[in-house]
Image (cartoon, rainbow, N blue to C red; front, top):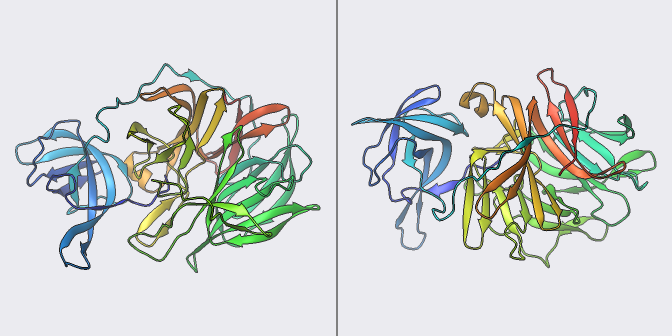
Length: 434
């Protein structure tokens, strides 16, 4: 997930952290120093960098040092005086002298992944190659004619396409002076046509904002500018919901609360009548649905190591497989922020389906650190009460940059994935969601 590295307090797991003494590509050699936990081959560990010391402002007592997670791995060999580990995921450069500690189970009472035999999915259409490195796509009725268009953007230009009989015809364009990070679109103002949200980043001024576009006449016009990053949750066939989050000048906690946004007096403002989303840190990499059937929505989030985590009232569950990796990222203060592809949900009766992408590094963890991917997968997943089942999946050559779900042409719902190839061109893949 394009996500902020989590900030923790040292020694909260009851284990004295050890040191990284040598790094050889994906292999690390670890000095455990002292451990109250017996290490086993196959056990997970986290490599982290220590930060500033935290003190109680009243008593002056030390609360420990802040931590920034750098990598994740598993132990391969347990030697008398050192351990050998294999790095499985990285959020930064692993080097000699960094600290590590063993991982603990999140919820021991819940089992690990439960996967059924997954069918291989085939697209019903693939578009011709588009001469663009797409970072975002959406399905929405942009011009108000009652039929959905396909919206696609690279880092500098948004294009709206009319779709008909397996043909794409450009309808309108919009160029941005700032780098485009994400695209969302929906009739969130109730005016009969979609508002289009582009979250952008100015590298010179280190400024992130979202601009709101509306199709008027034969062109796109800017109608609003927000100091929020914007994401639309699409839980089809329910109404889309608009959420925003700010970046603030705080090295320790640079992310504001996630808040709902509403159209009011010709602009988008935070909805003061509703509370923030609980238990979620990062806007890009979450969705909400009633996964366990108790009548209340539960968050599904992407962890800092790109694992899926369900958060229920009485516990949580985390996948053993990574999802949502993306090359679409920026550096903000001391962290990388990852702008992951959309998490999409589709409900039919009591069945909630969840669609997630997996981008696979070219050459292991070092390629992952730089966002270099050459293969990908799309999974249709569902929660079975104790783990995730894969209903179908597809293997792709290239990187999934984004996905969209919505009605298109004569189909009630379609799933579209934007796939960037090694030739730096993009193709749109069309699937039936079920």
